[in-house]
Length: 300
Image: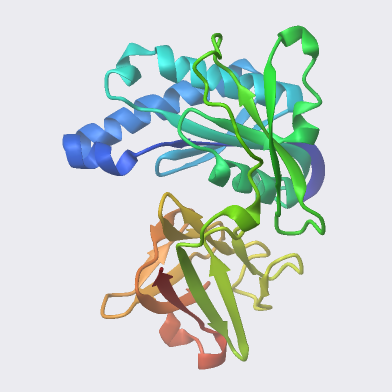
């Protein structure tokens, strides 16, 4: 049963997790990340929120209001910067959030606010909180938070660019770098892209683009109507220097990178490399050529 609600969607991402695996090995790195995500989960619950899912080194939470979301984000940054079990490993997080309408379905959330929040998280840097100006306006001045404008950016599903802000969570902001100019989508140098082909359609997904979504629902960038495919099935997103395929479906997504075995991705994500085939809901061998999504990664 699906229902629409208004809430804050928050993404918190552990920065430089690749270096953790290189420095400490798989077991220790996973332990460090788990400790960090556990701390973020505790803060979420403290502010009346709920953890929807954790994917790798990222947590996705919902909170009841814009104010609750911003205050939770600030407490998350403070917790990570003060917890000795986390600080000693030089771990930091970046956070993006937005308050808006979502579709709640099977303990998961979809829709406009999710897309905007993911975009905010993608713009945030280490130890930074980025949100929309409309979300920040919900925070009472009594909390004494300093909000800094970052200009405007474009988000999928929005006709006009939206105003975004940086929430200064540090108690002492004297050492926080001053922003000399607004952050604009057109100012960001394009470094990478993925060409997506489906039938006679060819779409270029850039590193500055919002998540590219696929599924049965009409709100997706690529609409594929098939009984095996979920309404909001999967997406291609740019994170931390590379593109990932993210599955949110019931039946999973099958990825075949050139020269490698086909891989099933289910409620998880995987790094996209070179070129290959994405098959939604079933193995590619069970699909016709017209039902397959082809991709090719480009690094500039």
